[in-house]
Image 1: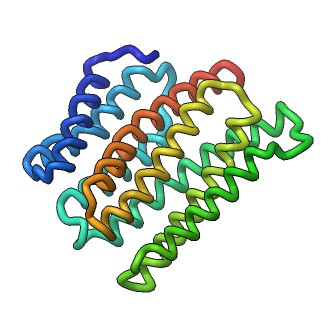
Image 2 (image 1 turned 90 degrees about the vertical axis):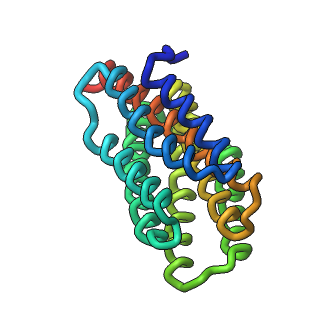
Length: 231
């Protein structure tokens, strides 16, 4: 269990207020709290890391931050540029998971595919297919962006399922929660944009907020393992 230091406490307080204010459509509190969330969890990362920080990991959080801020300013005006910014950290995360997957293959021989992997794959395909058919797109460009996001999430989910089911390290649990939070956040972001229901906004903002915590915890655990086992 991570220690609740000042930066993590600030993240929790800002996150809770942000989720509540977003659902209550309180723009003032949302404007104050949302810009605090990622910087506070990034500061927590720097207070906990015991080796040189990973520039690529920090870059992914910076891109998440700028995407959040653009949508906070005006989601309609910066919609496509924001989507582009969010695509990049997803690619970075896939890069990290792929490296974990390659390391897993080096230390463990996988002789058969677990049924759970097939379930994950089929579930993601069904989810993506349903979402792509449910959403009304304003342009072909939007459809392409959503399709790319969907493919990234499918790849992310499959790689995560591999390392989660075939390795017992704690980092993989954090990774699974991270990817699940990304999926919930993205799906309910589109549902909220389409239907504008408070419950969709609640799930979107909550999942997005906690995804940053799980992502940082995953990377801290990952860095600790690599320090111990890799040269």
